Image (cartoon, rainbow, N blue to C red):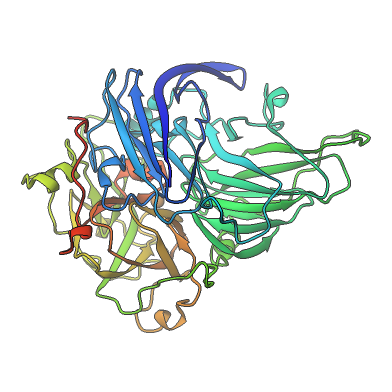
Length: 545
Ligand code: C2O
Ligand code: CU
């Protein structure tokens, strides 16, 4: 295994999209940011140098960082932010991740422009569990606001309602042919007829799941979240913010140009969202008579087709082969049920509020607790035994039982509590966690992401989780190993993992507006007894608050 070094200079750079320019936060001046390439088991040293005028942190999304939470990145969870004019050298220890991952800022909404791919190739001398593709193609889905992103966030927090929708969706930073002023810059992917390409995809958008397809081409999903899957043939895919998907594309069609396209899926059409379509062009090399018209758009499911989303998400399967075995916990020591709710809370007296019913503002909660981020790092406080930064009372079950997914639930019943509560796990606890979506203010999918772990997704369904009946249908044979999973609207998802990575690990919805509203919590996994079961000491240059 090698040590690979990167230098990340965080800086403001001027970018123009949709005929309008603004300064955005970038890494090394690039948007999307630089791709990190490594092999399985390598160690990365990334020197993050903050030359911008705002705080930043960088998170390695999907990297488990065994026993080394110090580099994980979420602001005020594992570290204090890297302040302007300072630097932090982050050691990123890869272990068994293989496939496409990504990195992104984890401070306010700065990840909108501060993100890039982290590609983990098979170990030298080993290969993919499928024939080696001719080339690898990055496909980074994102969104773009003409306004400054910090201003978009502050405006939405002040109003208390939904954020202003983005002005465009993007593929590799470009909106594509369907938008003003964008056509000359549309992302193009050149292919040779007869060859196979591997799309390394991530949904880096802030607030929505996306549907994606390529006109006249079948997609073969072979991996997600840094683990391989059984090949899944499909005409479209649904990808959550935070999720990565590896797709094989066989260039086997007769014409010269085809669109790939993506647009938002929103299970709750009442919330504001960007209903536009981003495109990139697949262009066949060689002598073709150019088609006279624009390439055709692929059909995509309707923007609110929750079955299309849930069907795709629930058809992923682990390889579960001799070379890629699975290790699903079979006996469970911690059974947890976490409700995911959108709440509405009273406006502060001297403010106007644009939340539900016009007289309230949105909030969000897990087990009815809206998370308050502390002013200092929870990891630092835990490691040094500092009291008063967090509580350890995160409940194993919701505080009250009701029909979570019924229509017209009384919102007065469920005003959340605020708190900075963590859930303590013992080393090697075997955890089953059921996420239960609720319809408290309005039901919507929640792409839940856990730091420090991959988990097996053993079951999901619409409606209320049934503790007796639903576990009988769990897939314990080849469940997919993921780090971000879309919990269906007014439905549930069950995951299992073994708590064998000591540390302080953030868990949150990957919709940025829901994070801003408080849909997050923290696991602290205690040290084990063995010498190799303890958190490693912190680096000397940890940022200070
Ligand atoms: Cu990709 Cu905590 O996030
Ligand atoms: Cu959410």
